[in-house]
Length: 257
Ligand code: NDP
Image (cartoon, rainbow, N blue to C red; front, top):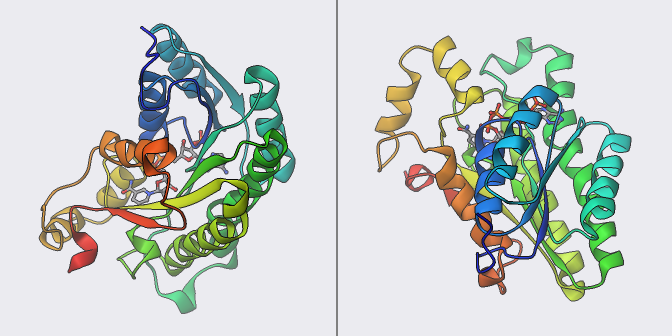
């Protein structure tokens, strides 16, 4: 069933890291709220299955295989969206990789490069190409970058992850300030621990960590991906029309403590 009166009805959206977790939940929610969705990530089998599932509801959905760390791939993803649906209105720059805590002075250089290449350079590439498309369209747009509570404070993760998520907030603020006059809003969400593949692996490798994080969280639980998606949908929608450059914690109160 399509939703002509949904929160995002008639909008065209691009979601990176849409093959699982928060990105997949956001793609499904955007579709339910009436947007056409382009799902982007590397695992084609996952993307294919998700797009079939979304299309069965009557919504518009397509996918493109891409790696956010490669500028050419990001350019292709934005071009694909514009060719398929005519323009780009909304983007959720969500693709990211985790990084376990280990002593900084012992870490491999490759770890730093991998995490920064995906989490920071990936968002950088996306912002550049999405903003270009939105400027060309001439009617503004709304972009949400996925940071983390690790973008606001140190958490029990690797230093490159914490640095990368702080950088996502820096890019968000810079882009928000620069493109506000053209009607492009740029915000970020800072999710707390959310039940996805990144987190399942992190909890498996670190027994007791989930309980430790629950003790540090006033709501004392792990989020469902849909709860993050709801905040992203609101930030992408016209209902948040005077919100730009913001960082919205969606963390059950974790960053209050
Ligand atoms: P998942 O591992 O389920 O999702 C990560 C997504 O990013 C996958 O779709 C993956 O797809 C994609 N991805 C990874 N690297 C690349 C790349 N180079 N190019 C394109 N896509 C890529 O975990 P989450 O849903 O939890 O993670 C989504 C985002 O949420 C990340 O940025 C993460 O840092 C952030 N976050 C997560 C939290 C949590 O507790 N879960 C908390 C705070 C923030 P594929 O492998 O198919 O490319």
